[in-house]
Length: 353
Image (cartoon, rainbow, N blue to C red):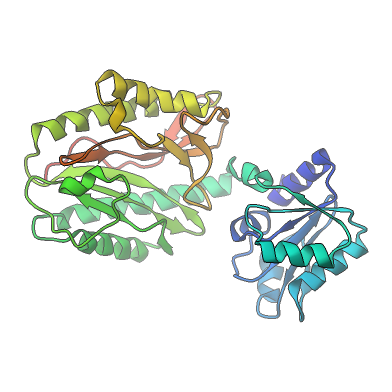
């Protein structure tokens, strides 16, 4: 079943006449459109893609199953025509994305009820199809190659930002269109900062260096983290590295469909807590990835949702101690029928450079 058909089935189940899709990520998901201007109106039986003259040909090639509508005036005027032609009485809209100004315009312009549908398309996106999985695997492959490459450049005297820039450009050279997020390179005391985006700090002998990075490939992301040591590390850092590694491996071994996000998170959290470092693991164990770097499903103590086959999640436990440093190790996991497939293959045993 196509993604468009899946959305139309949900509309029928929810007894909703139609939905207006304006989020770029959701628009790409339901229509395959990669341009920057456009929207879709999807009814239970029909689908319309509205864009201007710059993108009508592109939309015709990409948005299969859609009637392409060219707007020459305000784009919402075309939505009004579609609503009237199809006698739409209830129109869903993405309340998490539509601005107040846009909502106000729609409410004045349209003679129908506007129904918030936040999460409807996002929930469909959580279960990846074969094409999406293959694309994410390629993004992971590029990230793995990037990690192997950057190891030769991590040394005393080099700044974190130099490492990040070199890694980012190398992934682009390998086919990435952009990075998944601002690359994190956090060394020494900064490795205790979970989101320590690369700075001008110079790497020193004895530093732990945490690198959290990924890339976009054909619209889909990868997300991985490795922590390495520049020279022999502090024994305490080596201890917490081993604890994080064992916690991370346990999740890789045990995560499977049918478990809740809480249960997956607890695999790593309970182990780290048992070892005496629970208070130093302050973030969730993981999140979904796909068209966005953070999407459902989440694996945290606040995520009772049951995971299903073809979810793609991160597995990223960590321990962070102010004044000393920190460790995070992260893989991307594809949930399979009876377990999971690890999509990132870079070594996880402590690398001492």
